Length: 115
Image 1: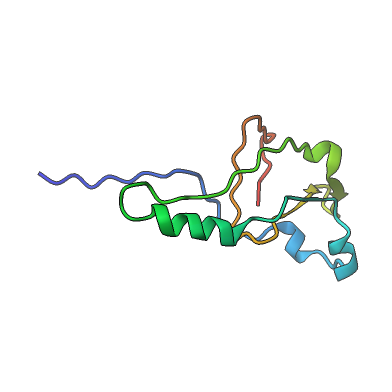
Image 2: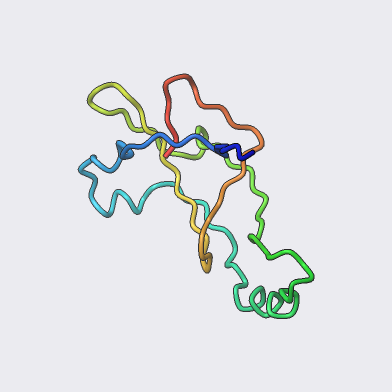
């Protein structure tokens, strides 16, 4: 017997972030409050992976940084013409190939969206 199963790790609501439709100058976009991590030691990590990735160990998924960020204290709040609000905060990770976020204390009010 074959049972097709479908699972989802996270909800995905399609759409365009409202901020993409704002007429914001490139200077204004660059001036958002920003947290910059230390540079990822990519060469060092790739050298380690060349030694350990011989099938004996699981592949490395990422390089962790523990941070404590509060967008309400550190971000920028903008109110749009329709009364909705956008909180903005930039995170830069020099040398990163991709960036993932894990949250330990996170709350979105009803009706809000995260992009």
